[in-house]
Image: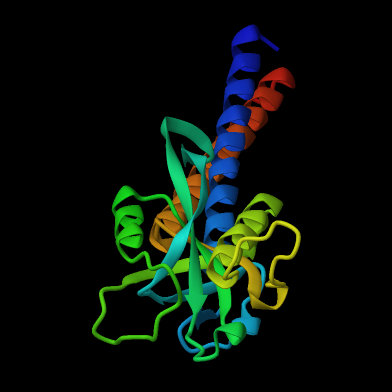
Length: 224
């Protein structure tokens, strides 16, 4: 077999692999958007769980819990500059008895979303107001990291402790719903496009590989 034929085979295999990778990327993205999407504003706080699709609106945030760096990707390949993802403490519903109030985390990385969430900041839980400004979102809930959980404790102690005491903080474990809702920025249509494009590229390159292989075999055995 000539070097030229070997290079063609290698090139077609690489193209097929790339198409498959793009297709898998699209499938994973679609799976993230698939399934029942629960309404955060009407579900019970203890119904929140890992890997749950949710939608809803937030009219009150109760402080920032930190941030981390997010790298934008196209088909899993890093592109452009890092952005910052901010974590906000949010109240789930409203309880007149503050001891019964539940809290979770909302994470956003679009600058306009972050600015809006900052503008909703309050020092303590407030009653729900249908006329208040709000941030509407679609997201997916994930387990909170140990760092964010520690920051939740610190923020809740500021809300609940009347006097700061490093040795005798109020027990706020029962108030914490240990999930962060990550706001989705894309759409499932973009992932569907990735599946179609990636699948087409993989199929076309695999077909071309098969044709070249058959032609090479026939030439080797002098069928044509």
